[in-house]
Length: 243
Image 1 (tube, rainbow, N blue to C red):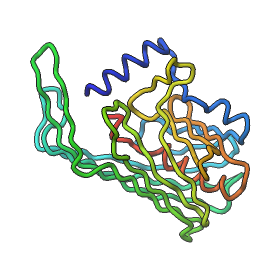
Image 2 (cartoon, helix red, strand yellow; image 1 turned 180 degrees about the horizontal axis):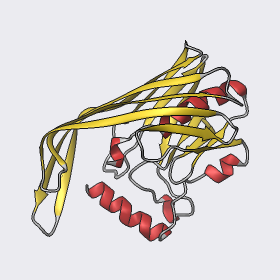
Image 3 (tube, one colour; image 1 turned 90 degrees about the horizontal axis):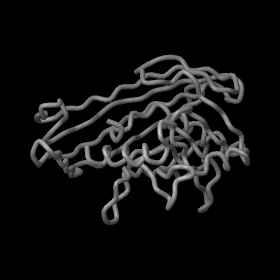
């Protein structure tokens, strides 16, 4: 709760009413192939389209089970979140029919202290976030993706995510990006604005998730396939940090 409040205040101070842009995406887009995604809003299922002309369908859900709730309906005590997210897509720029089946699980303990004037929420991880995906092409397994929560170092507001994707033997690392383009001192927000794709310590692509969904895909075909599969899985991901 406090993370979201602080992040919102910082975001408003930085951007006014405009949508905060992920740091570095525009520069990366100039050196890669940019693909826009349309049709994926806040719903649990539907059709979507890439700017390349490829079309697909998605479905997703995230369920929260808690021991109790506060007077605003927020979960308290032992809280578990679990869900799934699936997509299929075919068309220009896609070899065959690409599909992804993902599962989410997270468990934590939440408590709220303080009076009416100020309430502070504390959260202790019981089972860190785990987002696990399996990818197929024309029904044949081609790889997967794992995303989780790195162990925090010191006090931090950001809900950081990290992981890796592998498709047809090509592996890319994933790192969440929280910094806002144009913000002084590298100030960022709590929830990810997008993700960076890294290989051998070098950023080779990105996914922007705040506002318009866009991919900056590597031009190397094998790296592009891995980044595209991960980008679609991340676009339909219901991150518990957003709740």
